[in-house]
Length: 525
Image (cartoon, rainbow, N blue to C red):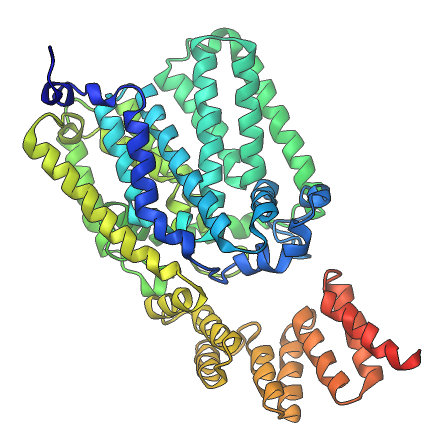
């Protein structure tokens, strides 16, 4: 009769439900504090808080699929699945952040379970697959994808990418039509989640040619190509309809990738040596030294690995780079490299690690290896637990952002905005001024300074600030609205009416502008 120790050493404990239960338990233990976090006011204020009336009504589902991710006139991103997930949470939350955070944790745990299964499908041992999956579960660089509400876009993308790939692997093993349809369905949903999914077919082509040896494609290649092409074509039509045509400047996109290539080393360093974490990293305040050290160490490990499978090693590199490089495209001139964008790419990093002999040959029945592995997981959990506290609320988030990226005018501006929302006008003025020093034409700064003067009753200074904002950005709806409110306050009805109407032309969803026009009409009744 086999005792418990022998069962553990023979990895029998990895059978049935046990590894999945441990993933679930560790995931909730690590991120349970995030359930009580508030909004960070980085995109979640626009995606959730500011769109609560839309998200509360399921009749708005067609709207979600027919406009951009922010449900605005800023038509760049088409990500209806993200908005649909927020709509689902909103039905239960009544504005409470708890339910959104709960969903983020569930998505992350489900990703880890899929990665555990996916690595086994690549013929890695169950013990190694489980160990690498646990690293993904607790890695601090992925904190943002879990503790920051909009970060779920990458965990959702990863779920559908993996489900699509796993369905394809099932189809290649057993070419039944249901697996083919599942592959197409999950691929299409991945496209509707984030544009990065459009690179998946290139990864699949490499897998089929060099890992599956092209055997399965002899009879089904045209079926796969036709179905994949059809899904991309339908997605392209839906995206163009929603965004009013593709606004992307492809030359600018390529040049921005080249310009931001040093960020690869920054991100790579965080994957192997997660000691330079930031909630809002920019290149100017980041270091590539950890990336260089990590790259040299990893290259040495791969070089001395005699049992590595080059086809899988290259597959890991392609996965890492293909899903990472699109995040370097900066269409909005914001030079940020948020860490949640490493989420999907890290699967490629795990595949690379799995091809290093030292890691591939880890004997988890050895006591020292078990202690080392448990110690590594524990250290990563401590780092993640500590890093996630930066996402507690809007003040914590932007204080951490301003501290780690002091040369970013955006972080200084947004920290000022958080203090303004808390009624601390002096602190808000201080950080707005710092932002203006870093960038004299920083968007929204003059508008925000105008709000401070408005609350202080210094109407002439407020008017000058609002006008300065509109001189720089004539179509900024909030500056138009704030100047209209100032004129309404001063009894300048004609000017106020014109600005309310102009605001609505720029932003048809501005309920405050509608209310302003209603208030102006009241004396006429």
